[in-house]
Length: 205
View 1 (cartoon, rainbow, N blue to C red):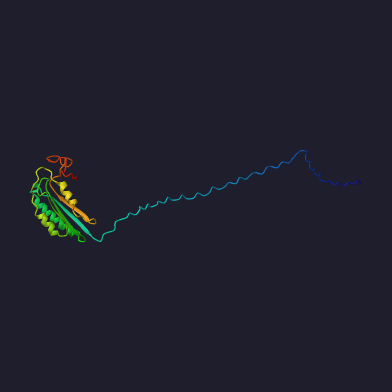
View 2: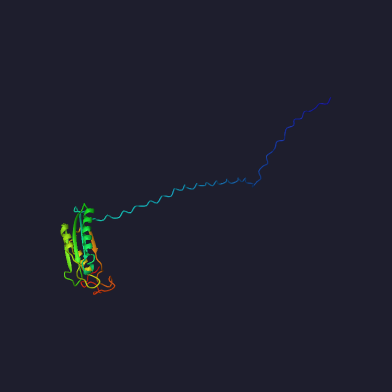
């Protein structure tokens, strides 16, 4: 009888191939990780703040304890005013009363200037500021429309007299003027002027 020989078969061992000379194992370079910096958060735009400009303080004059109103009345009393001189005088008196009544908290002083023309006598009738209102009214009442000659009158002279009155520095100042003609000078009067160069006294309006 034939004997069977058991053969032990083993899987062939795989032999590692030796590395070839001069073969260098190159490792793939590590990839650089680019670090991205996040953009800084934008700050909200600052609101423009308007600076209030404070004007420099002015040195104001001290308030006076005296409450005073100076009222000046100026009237053309030449002959050409004859048709309405009485109405004009009544109007000035009414103005005085109206100013007094509307300014009860003030002490009212009144003054009056009557003027005519440069060649007239009397040329002026002046009552300076006073609290005696009856005195001023009496000066107004006694006026008559006389004098004159050419078309313009001595308005500049009348205003000069008014400016020369004793106006109080701290007073409220009011003036009323009633007239029917301009002053002398071709700059304010176009015709009929005996003094086309202006007031013979050099006064200007």
